[in-house]
Length: 112
Length: 113
Image (tube, rainbow over all chains, first blue to last red):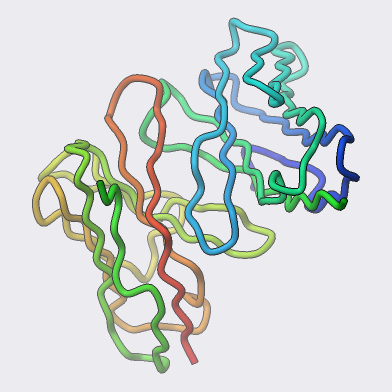
């Protein structure tokens, strides 16, 4: 069973729009929640991460919102650009290392 | 600065054949991992090595073996390949403590006929 549930599996957004990807988890021992970005033919790369003592973290156009009571977190991409077209994975781990559990991924396409 | 290097990038095997995927990192990381990526399944951990000389099973270890050859190298072996092992395999490395960023290689695409 999936420990980290991610939706949607695919997303099409117009250039300049907001892309939103949602994740939910069950294990309350998770204490580190990273997002990875993967371009075709490449390995995933860390995009942004958050710890549960913070409700929001922003880096440029990318924002993570975290709701500890609901056990949910989401990635918002503001002013989405065609260069943001990639697969995005949410993830969770305990202690910030070792066994990182990934969601199934969201394939984002930003159209001009 | 190469980061994490995987070989081969592509491989086609017949059912029952064996092969080894090689991985090397030049970031002096202590921990290394093997993941497989399948459509609709995300990235699933096969095996990991917290430090040189140790290996542990991940979520989907059946049908695989690993060897942590030294601090830099971590190999994944398929002893008798099966079509269900058709996948893209990623090696990653990280420090065992701290923010937990995984550094991935570019992947090895394996097809088992």
